[in-house]
Image (tube, rainbow over all chains, first blue to last red; front, side, top):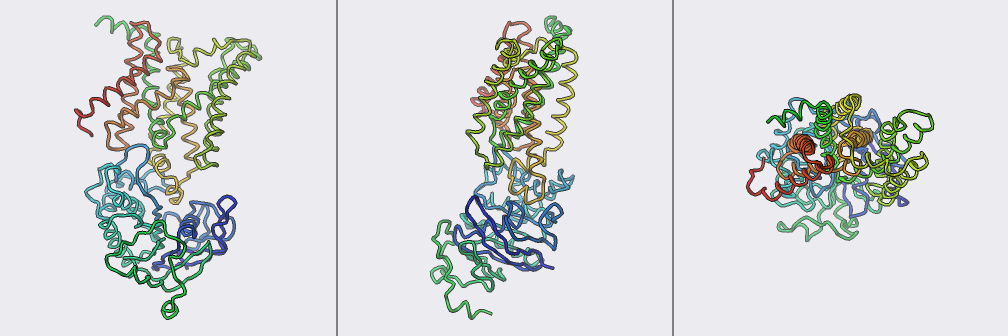
Length: 255
Length: 281
């Protein structure tokens, strides 16, 4: 049984079709990167696959159940693309993480919620920040709070939307370590990325989107040469549409 | 001391103080979620729409020959406020947080509709003044009962469902991906806001209702470091300014609603200026 199965998915935003007949599957234990330039539809794909936005045609199955009232969303941890974990009222990191314990049949987080939130924050290296307002944390730390909010659900499928874009280096490293541990423990991961960067060793497979179509589904594309430098900062929030050179011969040679 | 004793033995004042206490405690609960959602002015909008409900209740009551002819004013306000709040929420959802002009139309339509309908009911806009600015000095025993029941509902939903309402107000996208019933919770917030508006109408009036929901939260925001403390402190502050403000008007001939709101804003300014001296919790 596949953890995630997307078939012929079409998503329209207004009059504009963002995804055209996109199909992809993710098996248990796989780590799949969804790659593509801005506007290629990669965020839309994961948002539709987790039920955040509706789709116009096709189907999505999570753990063998179609997305809908009986979909097992409690087995999924979603990390949205965010600059900030704050809202109009101050909230502590622990309060934000505890909101991850809720679900369709769970409107209260339970008595052990603070302890579970503390453990999830510890997993992203923010144990000391539990009682601090999220507004006092750096952008990268706030992103880690949102990752902890997904981890506190103990998800079997973790879906992350650009978790390292614009995030400070210590947070990127902490994130790579956390992800490594999760992959080791068998968590299935779908991660939207602008490019593989430091996460490359963890990725089993890449699905590349361009203009709302899947243009590649297989081995991760190799990094472009100038990206391979150790000191290159892997953040390109506003790149043009040519991020991935899929014509490179080496791609065909990959197993 | 005897003057204060007198305040608490006057039965009219007892009823008024009880209503002020309950409303002061309840209004900031929904206010906290509204500030969290950056919808501080929603209460004002609902208040405008509720005015049409008051006049409509008056018109219907008059047509049915009820005595007094404003017997249906409060039920009318409740219905209009709930319908208005649900419409506002739906417009907000459909337009992804926009719908600015549609909301403005609804607000102004609410006031204009109220004035128009009260004329048709054979009254004048003077009849609306008690609803616009509050009429706590004429609280009856049945008003106290109704307020108690409504406030119990508001506190039950607002405090009882706090984790879920927090989650939806904090990040609706994540809440949806978690399987939370986002639409139902959003409607719950809208309905509770509408009930808060109608229950607070008696104390401060429709034009100042929003102040009771928002200003205590604004003060609390200056002092708190967590969502839970913000809400708890705002409830305490709301109750305190309502009781103290109303008590002042027992001796000084001031409008109770305006006194309460001015007192709350004064507390805000004092806390804002003195914040450097107060340790943050």
